[in-house]
Image (cartoon, rainbow, N blue to C red; front, side, top):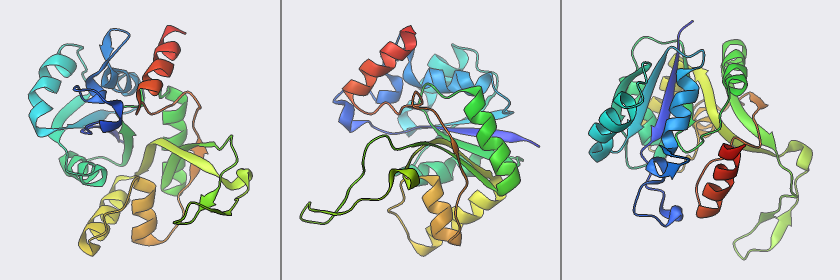
Length: 227
């Protein structure tokens, strides 16, 4: 059983209000994406594909992969204009694998336990998506921003990554949604749901497995690093 991690680092991070893409911002002396790569380098996965912007490919090879001696990074490839196009480009760069783990490069605190849980679920159910239960009450609102529904917190989970699947099935799902021209898809679980109309398997993530998106997130990440 061969596992490949697809690490996404092609976003611009506009909500970070920085001239530097968030995945390359320094966190405790290392670029943010370094932590995700290190986690997969030290995990059960066999290969890593790093997806970044076209203009950052050489930088990533020289200043991240070679500098920090990531032996499992087999390829650095260009992403697309959207997240799901970046994932598709990464899938096309993978050769000969059974399980693929899609992970946001801006989630620095993924652990071995989370990785293994998603892989085990993907082997048994075809999918394994890391998530955490909602702590707060969630409201669904209409276009006028009036609350119209309050789902039970017991049934509300907040999606994280890695999102892990049978490689063949995820490729088929992406080809299906691309052929249909669907674009408003923000994670890989949605791609599978749109393509096959079937549920994905949710597994326990971690409240520390945050995605660094705003300056406040960077402050929280710095605290986690110090601990």
